[in-house]
Amino acid sequence: MSKSEDPANLTPLERFNKKWHDMLRPLGSLLVDMFHYVGLFLIGAATVWAAALNFIEIMGKRPHASIEDLLLLFIFLEIGAMVGIYFKTNHMPVRFLMYVAITAVTRHLISFVNHSGAVGYEILVVAGTIMLLALALLCIRYASHQFPSGPARPPTFKTDLDGGGEK
Image (cartoon, rainbow, N blue to C red; front, side, top):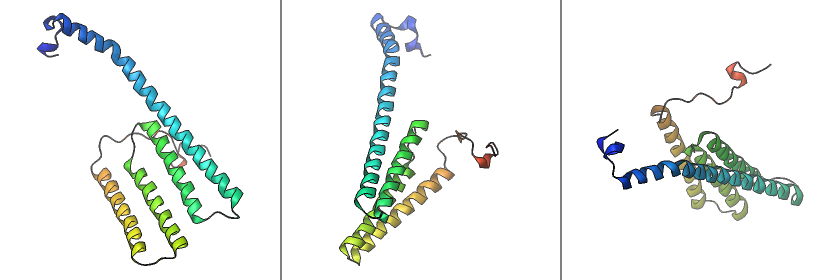
């Protein structure tokens, strides 16, 4: 504790201010946590709702699912995984956003080729975008492996590979 933080050296107004902050800090923390969890649940619910409606549309209106439809469902799956990981760890891995971006641009490329029939420069640009995203993902993975941001966390669950699963 520094000399200025010693309660004996504080003016009455500074002591009141410190007491006020100490009383309200837990309430502020609670409100931030509540907003955080409510927001995560709403994003998760909206993702499930959008995926379910899209799935019902695919099954009801078309004789078969296209690769574009499957990639869209995969995007919903990745967004759901991001929400789950953020909920469990309070960390948002950038690489999941990159997976969503690569999948979305791939879906756009397939749609572009199937519906416009154009080939050439436009396809090269979109394919180059996918390549740049993949290279950026490779750089992120390499950097996070070589320069971790903190100590490795223990796994939150056991798998069959860990030897802890039931046979």
